[in-house]
Length: 191
Image 1 (cartoon, one colour):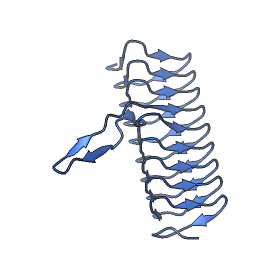
Image 2 (tube, rainbow, N blue to C red):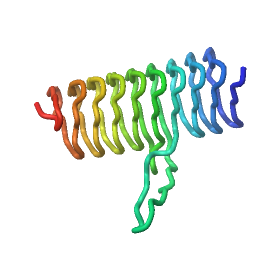
Image 3 (cartoon, one colour):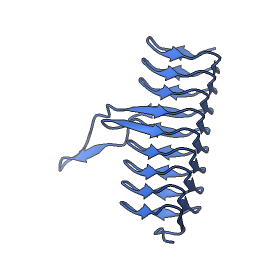
């Protein structure tokens, strides 16, 4: 009921789409997916098989891209897309922005909790865990099997390498790298 599936969208076999969803033009939902009420997939979003997206989540909105011309902020067109690989679960009221030019990617088996923000061009590796109220700013990288605690702020162009861990309420400043297997806490983030 009250779900809109636009022209050119594809829905895989045995997927379930609950009421009040919007599936944009050219989007693809794989097989055996579950899309809970009120989910929005902007045009061109791709979900692989067995993806679960909880209520109120928005995938593919414009990234937060602006340039100041000396008088006002001008919007930079966001023309990329979002790709979510197989067996990913995304919590309620999360937002994953489309890439500015390329793509924002969430790789296989990753779990993203409620109320998370994943910005444009972010790349998340396989089987990562991202806890509630975490924000990952544009062009950052989260490695495979990384663990991100709740209320973490990861600034732009950061790298959390494979198996890296970032503790709850940690603040990771721009261009910071958390090396593979290391555990970081605090603001600014440190071993």
